[in-house]
Length: 95
Image 1: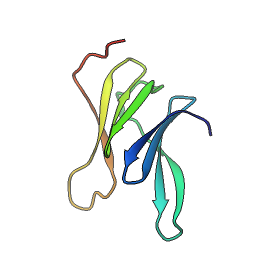
Image 2 (image 1 turned 45 degrees about the horizontal axis):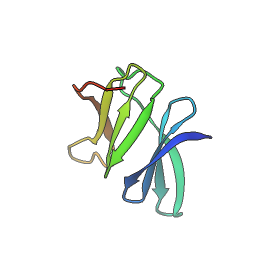
Image 3 (image 1 turned 180 degrees about the horizontal axis):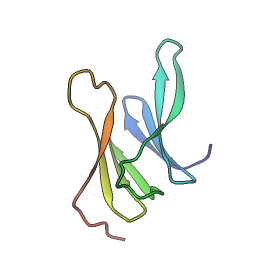
Image 4 (image 1 turned 90 degrees about the horizontal axis):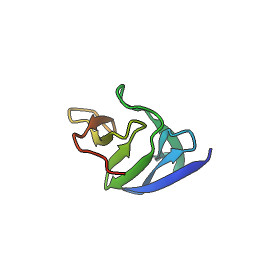
């Protein structure tokens, strides 16, 4: 797997875009203390490939293939754990 961009996500996690424009993140298996890459699913409305990523703490921002800005935030609720969802931001992307 080759990445074209990697960002530090906080809490010793990384997020990345691969050469096909898919989004990945690291997760640590605490029982074995091994870190593996896992694919982050995109929202239905997101247009692949993802062009750019940035991170602030646990939040990711992504620009999709239609140059729409998305924010990934943790789902709120009981027993959601590390589940996230993408939300479209109503902000223009300036090239």
